[in-house]
Image 1: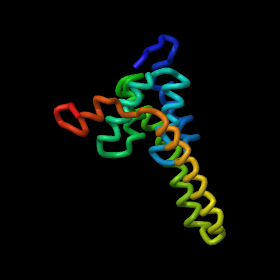
Image 2: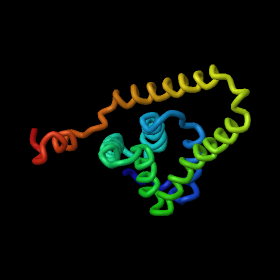
Image 3: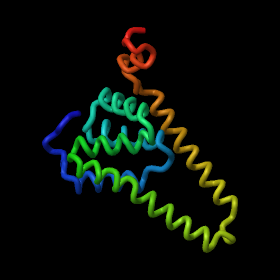
Length: 157
């Protein structure tokens, strides 16, 4: 990971960056990985392409959603344990609040919501996920070492 002295590494800054991502990132974990790559590799240059690829490969190997693990790892690397917590809270809070509000709205006004509107939302989510997956396919997110380790425990093909 590259450390640029001009980058702000305080937990509050990490929280605000992940809050913005949490408010604007739609789709599932694959889409989130695309947004994270754009933010932390391309825009902020906190990670090299190779470091990000290795981090994604590691997180996909572990149980649970890879995007959450990547986000927490980036927060940890930037601002320690409080940065990891800030990254998790910033990225998760908008979705949790939206989910609660949506559930309350559907339970109260579900009869007034058309099925067409819900199907339109599903189509949009599929489009966002497809675009992110296409972007990730174009990048080499598995290093040769990790690939050979997965094929053979000794590391040789």
